[in-house]
Image (cartoon, rainbow, N blue to C red; front, top):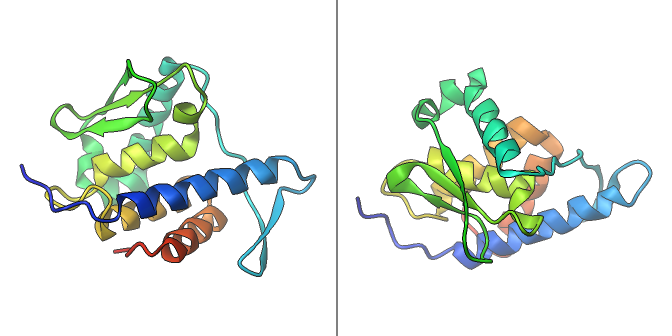
Length: 166
C-alpha cells in the first residue's frame, strides 16, 4: 500500500512537542492550570508508562474502549508493542500493526506519544502519515482518552503549527 506524501510531519511533531511541554508545565502547578493562547486551561494528568509491558496493556485497553471500536474499524486489529533498538522516537509499523518504543528514555513511554502511534494504526489506509486525517484521529483519540481540554489544546497547537486537521 502506498501512502500519500507526508508534508505535515514537522508541523505535527512541533505541536506534539509543545503539548508535552505544556503537560509538563501543568505538573508543576498546584491546580494543573496553564495559560495558553489567552486562555487558562486545566490540563489532565498524562500517564507515563514504566515498561514495555505497561505500554502493551495500555494499548490494549484503549483499543478495547467501546467508543474507539465504534468509531474506527481498525481498532479491532490488535496492535503489538516491541522495544525499539535505536535511540530514536517511537514509531508505528503499519505492515505488522506494531508500535516500537524506546524504553531507555521516558519520552516514548508518555501517553501522548503512545496515542500518536495508535492514531497511525487507526487512521484511514493510504492517507499521509501525518496528514489531515491523521491529525483528526490523533486529536479525537486524545480528547476521548485525556479529555476535552487536551483535545482543544492539541487542535489549537496543530492549527498554530500550520497543520491541516481532517
